[in-house]
Image 1 (cartoon, rainbow, N blue to C red):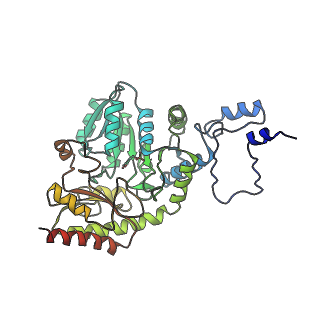
Image 2 (image 1 turned 45 degrees about the horizontal axis):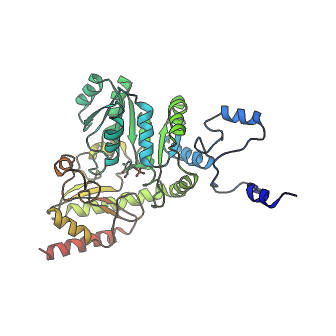
Image 3 (image 1 turned 45 degrees about the vertical axis):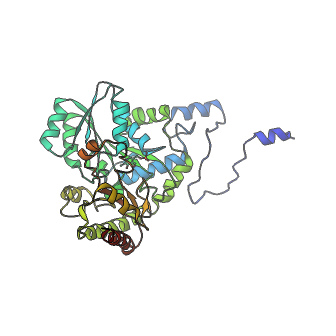
Length: 400
Ligand SMILES: Cc1ncc(COP(=O)(O)O)c(C=O)c1O
């Protein structure tokens, strides 16, 4: 008979008699071996064999593989994925795997603010030279890559918050000729609308916090790559050493979200197009940044590389800062919050939120004007979303 304390201290036995229909959460820090020989075999067969959850966990790996399968759709070969604790951890891992001290990184002038800060505060400190460009002019990009022996190009498309799109095919051809690695942040498009690996990108990163999970309960990220050798020797090695892994629970939440990703994206895109077309007709709106509109600067590029135009947009309200702030405060249905890609329509005023601490002249150079409002169009009835903006606009015209 075991003593009371021994029963308490032991782990409960797995009593399942049949395979679960849905992916279980393997909430365990480590995995056991029946003897040392089995342990040695499993240690040797990593990644993929389970030793310790920071190195790999069955729940996390299953979801990472699902993201990789989505990104590899149409590629004709397998891709390999890792799930990280956040989108920022995924970007860090991707950049760290491609760059060493003394190397040069080429990236966009306008990027998600956290990515720019990561590059400026961490990678520059670690001896990486950084060149910023809008990545639009082929000749200039070619010259920058060749003259500076660029090792990695990091591109976000469509970009946060101005929705400019970069031509992935153009970047792939330049990167291939010069042996640079192209990393694409595919958070806004999702693999439903765009699959950079199939165009020839080396790595894709995601903030799964956004559309892939899609419900706002989880923070996570992913890195996907189609080169098995690079995946095992670079990405996975850094992943387990840095400890950027997602927790099984977070991965499980992303899995649950992804079951409806294709349906959500369809509705998100439909609603966004209708809202963008409506905004175009409003005198208060000076500019609508939505790649689905023919007038948009990147419409043709978006059309070429995306199957639909996504649900992120920004508008420029033709009023001074204080008035724009009052206007946003009048919205009743739309939620003011610094995230995106969830089921409800979300509004962010960069000048008051994400770019609050960025000097005005710097943010203006990045296209973040006082009147810029970013919208993540949700899954509500689009007439209700329009009605919310309409009532805020009516109030605005009455208050003048
Ligand atoms: C395009 C893009 N990439 C990466 C990130 C960072 O993701 P996370 O907040 O999950 O770290 C964000 C966050 O908003 C983003 O918008």
